[in-house]
Image (tube, rainbow, N blue to C red):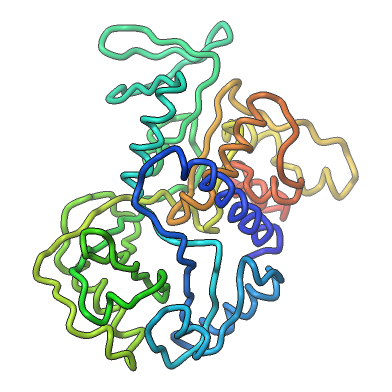
Length: 352
């Protein structure tokens, strides 16, 4: 993780907290800002957490903990230390999204569902497409359709891929009822909900977009908890027989950083910048990148959607309205939609 990426995540965490605080009194959804414990289940993870703590340098966001301190935060004993994120917690995504949509509709927002945007064409300053025999036109079009983004020809060159995930729901136990916060390891476990269940997950199957129930992934979710916290008796005795789970498909990028901005015209840019390395070396002028007019995207949020979406949404609004961005230029470069091929061109490599 680069320093710019670390700063982006810190800003995203703060903005997420602010947005949640604004929405909390207006929308009813099950949640608890319990904090999140990050368990150092091996030496590699411990070193990674130490590095993040150095980069963050803010105990209010991220604090290293001893085994005793982490056990107190969790409410159950763990043999290793780790880290704690106080300004975090858990919520019901379905209740949160549905409740927020319902509230925004009372404020005049129009939400249209079951409407497929297919093969949009730009002419006379607007994007046009057909649906059910009717023509629809809008000045601005934002593509925020997750792993199906690459179905649009305009997204050529963006190396997005699907990652299937399954989150299991398990009934609580007398031990797990004592859990005070979310625990993350090579997976995660949430405190008990009003339905007396816990969420445990999630599976990670790259290049799979199916959303069927997988018994194998269901068992793997529980097994990961028990394998990563082998010395903890409270991970035993979990009832997996109900086979309750929810499935989804994440949209991911290899560098695990989201993209936001105007949709780049890949076929034009790779010709524009085929000699970029030498142009910069010779200090020659470089023309502005060719993008599709009035077409924007936000994607690649992967497993951090609720954390990064508020900041990415603010950036998107700023770009569309031609307002100053709420981030520095180096962070903007990290999030840029054309970064994958520009990085290659900056090194003098050929882009096919």
